[in-house]
Image 1 (cartoon, rainbow, N blue to C red):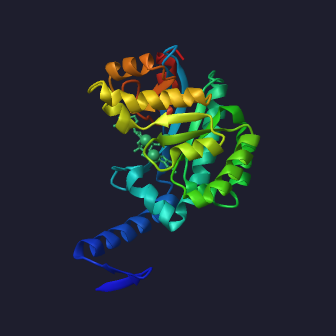
Image 2: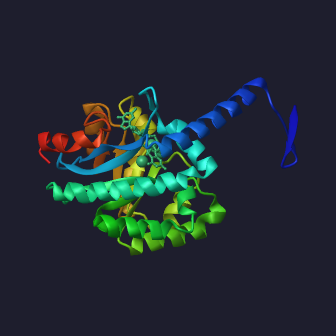
Length: 278
Ligand code: C2E
Ligand code: CA
Ligand code: CA
Ligand code: CA
């Protein structure tokens, strides 16, 4: 079978047909999961490499399947984006994370920031700013401690739109981090135009940082670039003390990864914080 798409012929193989069937099954299952409230957030601490103290938390989405298994966001976020379900899911994530920040403040952690992943398709939605405002208002979260993590995946034609949206977000006092920095396109022209607060070095760079001197050069450059632009820099996916030491020597500000903690369910978070001197 062949289908014409944008003037090109795309041949469907058996594998592609299977894949499409698989995706629509997953999409259907995700709809049901949302209805049955099977989605929840886990929280992973972020640590200051200067002080060794916890400085923030990232909220990470999880889906518990009916059989108890966890389905990874890498599998269902793309489907949620494709189907538009990400808008509703993202609103819920935003609200939950803001409430969690306020809750942590009440538990005696008024200084911990909350990083929230936001898809570009959420940002494109005309309701986004209103959603963010009401999440802040209803939860009583401190805007300065809310940080939206955005992946640099937007087409360049949309740069004006993105710049305006980010400016409105910043006007609320909310911070912005560029996620997976260095893995996308046109990173540097983005930084020139967009007002962001933080760069997150992707874990693919961090994983190789101990290998040899050459593998440090990109993280080193990202750290220097960030600091030249007055941005803080966080390295994700830090799994070993050696990686943390190298990053600290390179001047990286903060780190996040299994070395410190895996993403955990909310009921374990306060206990973890208490045990880790935060
Ligand atoms: P990300 O934002 O780059 O998140 C970092 C991922 O690395 C997370 O995977 C985290 O669990 C994992 N990780 C943290 N420390 C380590 C480590 O030391 N080693 C290794 N190997 N992995 C580590 P996760 O939770 O599976 O999330 C995958 C991606 O899904 C995220 O990548 C993010 O792009 C997306 N995502 C997660 N939650 C949300 C959400 O609420 N909304 C949106 N739009 N996207 C989300
Ligand atoms: Ca992230
Ligand atoms: Ca990443
Ligand atoms: Ca990512």
